[in-house]
Structure formats: C-alpha cells, structure tokens
Length: 243
Picture (tube, rainbow, N blue to C red):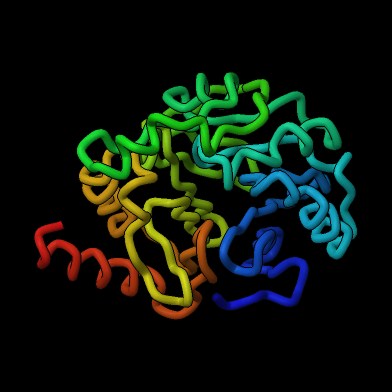
C-alpha cells in the first residue's frame, strides 16, 4: 500500500484529496470562491482527526465545512460522518436517495446475495456505523452548486445508492468505489462488499463515457496522466473478460 506522507494532496485549484489511511482510504475537499468547503466522504471512525489536520494545511477549519457528501453507505466512508457533522457547519450529509435510509439508521448497505461471502456478511452487524442525519437526497444527473458545478453520477451496484462525482471545471472524476486503484493498479471492488457485483461492473462503464483529465479514487492514488484512457482501457479489458 502506497502511503501518502502529506496530509492533503492538491489535484486542481480548489480540489484536494485527503488520505485518511495512507492512500487506502481517501476523502476529498472542494473549496469554493467564498472559502466554504464541501467534504466528500468521512472515512473510518478515527478519520476526522486527519481530515481536520488536512483542512488546517490549506488554511481551513471544520467550521468552514458547509456541506458533506457521502458516495455511499459503507463504514469506511461513513463512520466519521457523525463526528464531522458535529464539528462542521453542516447540518447533516447529502447522499443518494437509495442509500439515505442506511445512513440515517447507521446500517451498512446489504451484501451481494449471489455470493456466499455476501450472504455470510448479511448475518452479522459488522460494518455498521453511527447513524447520521441526511440533509439532501441526491439523484442521478443532479449538478450541485459546488466549486462551479459538481455532477452526480448514479453508479449503483457497490451499494444501491452509490455515486461517482464529476467536477467538470477542474476535470476531476471521483470514482467512489466503482473502481479501485490500490497500489496504483485498477481493479473491481471486493464482491462481498457489493450489493450487486454484476451491477457494479455494468454501471462503472459509464465512467468511460464522461470527460475528465484526472481520475481520483476513494481507494488508491489518483491518475493524472491520460486518466480517461487508462480507465477506458481497464473497462475494455474487463469487457473482454466478460465483465
């Protein structure tokens, strides 16, 4: 696992990656012209301390965070959400409508019933997190007034309400967990953690159709050079394998 030593990594003006467990788990921060911050994902339970340090490195405080988005309802993205809400100026989190109930109840989205591991996971409470209020239910195609426009791409499968994010002004795509880039090598998420691995593979192909210059991942470092072609190449190879 590559370990980021810097508390925050700038991808483009006003767009930053926050490594909360090396490059293994990332959050993101968008800074608007008025200085307000939108945070994307809140990591594990201990991640808020690292998020606060990262914000400090760019001259920001938790009170500058006006909005928090979650890509989906899994513990490694939502466990720090309740604490970040309490420290920030946000009243809750924004999440796709299909995952909102899981966030509000603190229950992880279901595993893939088509796999043995997914069925076994469904029998345990492992992966639950602190319930967090939802302020806005997001939908596919929404363009949020964040740093010039942040587009919501509903890419279900990893969870029912999983989203990817496209920031056209900077050319940054955040894949969420649709595609991993662990050790700088793209791969699919673990089947056991997907609600439907088959659907995840199907919807991820949409990430090869939009325009961007930097591909950012919630698991793994970003790709800055020929990012769209790298993602499309990964998707082509997957399709050739019947995925």
